[in-house]
Image (cartoon, rainbow, N blue to C red; front, side):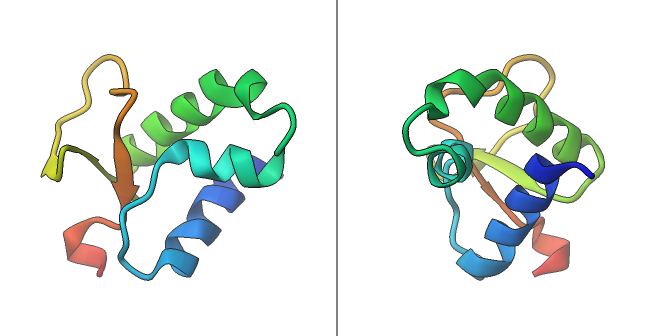
Length: 82
């Protein structure tokens, strides 16, 4: 069971089309130690992006993720899934 994947996809449902930071997911899951999971959440976000399950935005523009995830990035459902 991939709990981080489930948590990200669940937050997508909860936010109902509102963009949010991937860090919100781990801050909710691990309020005291969330910093320890930043790399994990960024890797999972990249995977979900590659699977076409999320869009990644920076400054309200959809970005094409090739390398690193911008720190100020927001995620949302892809436009085709909304």
